[in-house]
Image 1 (tube, rainbow, N blue to C red):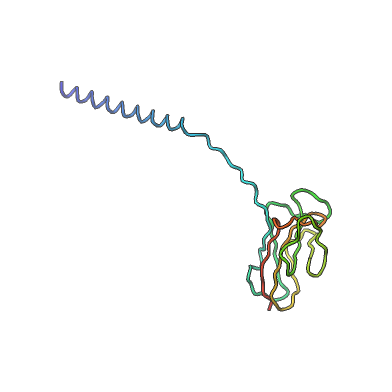
Image 2: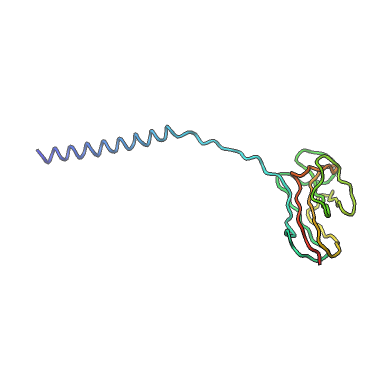
Length: 152
């Protein structure tokens, strides 16, 4: 009789513990809130693929330009999310909404180019990459970056 009682008690304990485990898991699942997917706003910006900030380079200086969160297209039409690169010599950016004039120190890449070779005399330079729309109107500091280089 004692054996049957112990077996019965053990079975009840196992049954109870399995049941409580299941109900605990079910409770936890019910308490979990559905995962909310956060869609991060796509980061926008420009960057130099080459040269690196602080680099010492020879002339002609090879420059490779990158952009994220926007599309590159030749100058002409103004379309949201599109534009092209400009390199600014010894400047750090161009004011938002202002047209970037073509000059020896503000170089346009209106055909949608993403690299260039610039003839620069020996010395230290700040070179900025500025993205602008189809009519060369600057996207401002959000779409600009600058590096310092030394040309030997």
